[in-house]
Every structure is written in C-alpha cells, then in structure tokens.
Length: 604
Image 1 (cartoon, helix red, strand yellow):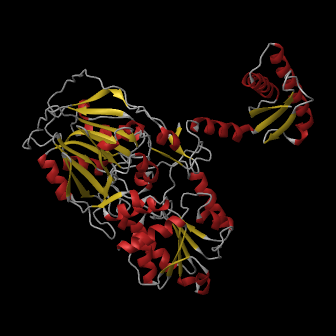
Image 2 (cartoon, helix red, strand yellow; image 1 turned 180 degrees about the vertical axis):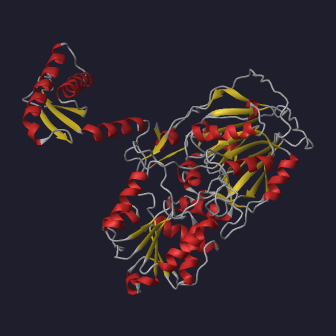
Image 3 (tube, helix red, strand yellow; image 1 turned 90 degrees about the vertical axis):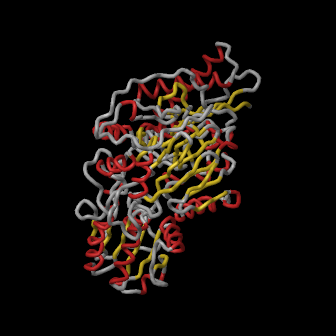
C-alpha cells in the first residue's frame, strides 16, 4: 500500500514490457440472438503500426476508486479519477485513490481526462492526481465539471486546470479519436456514458447508469443515440456491474416521491431528512414537497451546503428565493410545522450531522419530541451497525424515525440485471468488459452476457492493472504484461512515502492490544545499561496487573539487552530487535496479548 507521496515522488513506471506473443482463442459461431456487432456496420479499419489497449487502474475489484485507461496508439485517455472510502480495518485512513504510477513519463501523451458524472468515487481524487499528470485537459457535462472545479478550488488548483464543459452528443476531436458524451440516468443529474470513436472501432464506457423512464427533474437516457451506435457497430463496452446480481429493472426515482410527500404532509412537527448530498434529484423532491406545505428548508453539513449551492447556481435545484437556508438561529423562530431540515449522515458517520443530532452534540440542531426523521438511503455494506446505532439514539431522543426498511424511501442509482441486458441489446458490442464492482458483481454481469449468446472470448473479466489488447480485426486478448498496481492512501495531508502499509499495520496492532514504550539509558562508550529501563504503556495493562507486569518487562528488557551486548552486538537496530523479540514472546505466552513494542535507547 502506498501513500499519495509515493505516486507523486515515483520516478519509475510500473508497466512491464509488453509481450509480443499472440494467444489465439477459438471462436464458434454466435447464437442467432447474440447482440454482437451489427453485421451491416463498417468493419473495423486496419491502422498500420497502431494498437488499441484498455486497462483499469481502479474500480474493478472494489466499489469506488474508478479509473479506466484507453490507449489509442500513442494517445492516452483517462476515464474518471475517483476515490474509495476505506474499509473498517483501515484505521484513520480518509480514503484511497488510484495508483497512476504507470503513467509517469507519459504525461505528454494524455489527450484528456473524461468524467462520467460528479460522484466522489469518479471525481474525488482529481486534486491529488491532476498535478502529477501535468494537468491534462478535462471534459465532462455541466454539473460534473462544476463539482470537479469545486474539488480543485479547495486546493487552489483551479487556475492550473484545463476544464471543458461539453453537451450531450457533442463530438470533440482529440488526436485520432472523437469523444462523445451520451445521456444516461443515475442518482445524480448530468450523468453520461462516454463513447470513444477510434480508428479501430468505438469503445463505450457506460459510467454508472440505470434506465429510469420517469426520472425526476431530468430527461431519460438517450435510447436513440445508444441504439444508433449499436447499429453503426461498437467494438467494446465497459459497463456498470453494481446490481448485476439483482433481477429485474431498477425502480424509478419517482417511486419514492409519493412516500416523501405523505411524510412531509402528515408530520405535526419538524421534518429532518438525511440523504446523500449528491442525490440532487431527491433533494429537489424534498424542496417541492416542503414548498407545497409552506415549509422552509434548512441545510446542515458542509457537503450538503456545497452541492446544493452548485446545483442552485446551475438550475438543477429550483426553489423560491429565501426558501433554502443554512441552519441557524432563524430556524428556531419558525413554528415546527414550517421547518424541514436537510442533513448529511445517512450512513451513520460519526462526525456527520445526523449522528451528532442523535447524540445531542449538534451545535444547532437538537431533537424535539414529535420530530419526524427520514433516512432516505440504504446502509452501504459494512455501515449497518453504525446506522442502527444512530437510529436507536434518535428514538431515545424522542424522534419518529422512518427508514427504507418500512417505507419506500430510497432507490438505487445502478441498473439491475434487466437494465444491464438492455444496454447490451442497444449497443450490440462485440466485446463486454464488466466494470464497477466487486468480483461477485462482475462475475454475475459476465454470466448475464453469456446467457444472451456471448462467448468466453467476448467477455473479459479484468482485474486492476490487467491489459486487454485489440487487433485490427476487432479480436481481443489479455496481455501477458500487467500494470503494477498498489493501494494509495490519503491520510490527513498525506504521509511519508512508502510507509502506508506499515502505518496501517501499526494502527491495527495498537487498536487490539495497545502499545508499550521501553526507554533504556546506556553509556555512550561501553553501551552498558544505566539503571533500570522506564516503562510507559497505553491500552495494554490493567490496574491490577500494573506492578507485576512492569517488573517482568523491566527484567526481560535488561536480560535481552545484556545478552545482545555480550554477543558483541553494536548496532542500535540489533539491540531493539532483541528487546522487541523478548517482549513479544513474554506478552504472547504470559498474558496472551500482542501489543506494539517501541524500544528507545538513549546514550548518556
């Protein structure tokens, strides 16, 4: 695992020398219903001396950290640069970002960074990655680029960035490739699929999508253009796999509008709605229902305030002047039945607004008896316990809590199995690359493709860093070479280069059994001990054990140091290894604990 400092300071690329050997794969005639490339479409053109390669640098073994690379001859296109929130065992880590070390030294070949939509798992690493890539041109739709700009503004990098807003269906010539953004629906407006029209054929990256026929405050997906591309011929599609294991079609955002309406209508007191700050269509629904019942909307949480301001400025959230306000003293001057509060924290985050409201520690919002609190979300896997804790705290405070378990209060932004199949039917790609998700999700996507006639050599389950190469006839093979890929962590303002894995390992040890610091004073000439070592422990020794264990640690430390000295050891690291080993054995055998041991030797 690497910190961001590793990537920025790295001087060597991680890609191995490509293999020249070609692996032939047998193909049998596809079944009559297989949606392979349209037989009437123009054949893929041969381009002398050229090549087409694609590979993921994130998002293919996890949900998040999305980053996909398309190489057309010497031109490089980057699709999304997102972050991934840490697992529970990554103590103190803020998030992870893609490892783009393989692009070191190739910065002048990067024609563009293309963003599919404005969620953090697709744009959240821009402030870390763009400087190291020498600020290549960036392209995306209006709302998406506004959110990219906000990320860069926070680090004062916007002046160096080259940000370009594009319209749907607009084709932009970048070297040998024409790039086109296509309308799809997701859980945030302005989401897009990206088509790269290359000399070898068209590559389509769907981004995150579902087919919502009744979306709120935006148009449906561009079925016509997707179908046109399918008729013209699509070489390969990189398609969202998140809900491939779920049957049927995803529900529409409109399906929850009536539930929100009824809850706001029937509430006797205040209504507090917690949801993702990026669910702008959901937020617009809350605003419209609040307006109908003469309620003002008060916003709490930095990301919620920021996203709503951006969306209002661009016209994606519409409300009468003065209706949407930041949480403040004016809120308490209104009758409770005229107040709606929008807040973050629907995933149980400790420092987010909803958790602090439940604990009674929020500076501006306290639960009043009769408050209706709506969690308009589903807990992400791993967050269930944290969400349950917040819900229990809110009940103890006297609130009426409504969740998606009992009412229709949330719908996914990703397509279920039938949506995925519809995308393939429209595009009729020759090759399918399942993306965005854990291995089980992508495997389920692959099985869906095979059910409609795709062969093994047309469905490509890649891992992060694996390269898929296309020849001029449209055949694909997995390269024997692979991009060296590691985790890059963001921890506060960064961290020392090359120490990410060690830092996390140390934190895990301390979280389980604490730490003990052993301070030895020795003569600078003879290296003999001066008195007994000092012992300082945290999270290790209970009060009743203090005297016994401290005495034993002192004796074993002195013995280990003296024996090492008598063996002729002179190196400070050797002394520390001897002490650490002796104390590890003692703690393991005598008290069945494995704390972090930190020896410090001071010469006097």
